[in-house]
Image (cartoon, rainbow, N blue to C red; front, side, top):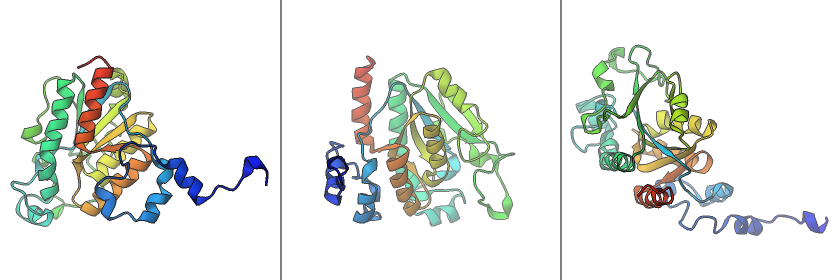
Length: 252
């Protein structure tokens, strides 16, 4: 073994990835489901989370049908309100989504909404009771209604990039970062985030601004996306970094 090819030990590996992020890269919702061994395996993905260049905000599938009438468990909401409901998880995400959209508009950044083409819809293999599809289920919730200057794209599959012209629109806007909120974390959010990364965009997910029917799927999806394809930020971290980014871009 030569001096230049010395054995790389576990201790060296830990030293190589330590101190990369000033804040704790793993201080997120998945801490209770990801083992210490898994965190060590994924350590090489640790990096500084950030915004890059011009951000565009993407609000995925904010359907009226997924938000319950009150803060109740998912199964109860499915039975009482709508089979598409995400129950308490959607309810708790509402103020954060509202704040994300406020930040986008106050900074003069584009907001793009997605909805589904009911006639061509096949985002997943999920079936509804009696296979009935009510177009009203895919109406964007009133509390998140798009503004006149916003863009709404109609998708056919899970990813908002599929058959929508989103890629062309993002390029027209000069987007470099795509900031994502909406649902579901393990479905359309994940598919869109991976596609955005694959098309060369920097991706930011707002942890409390995305949600799922399954809390386990939500946590595991965020863990995987954070390490491979996106910067998952809590809303407090995002506000801080967004404000600094605005200042650096000369857009106070």
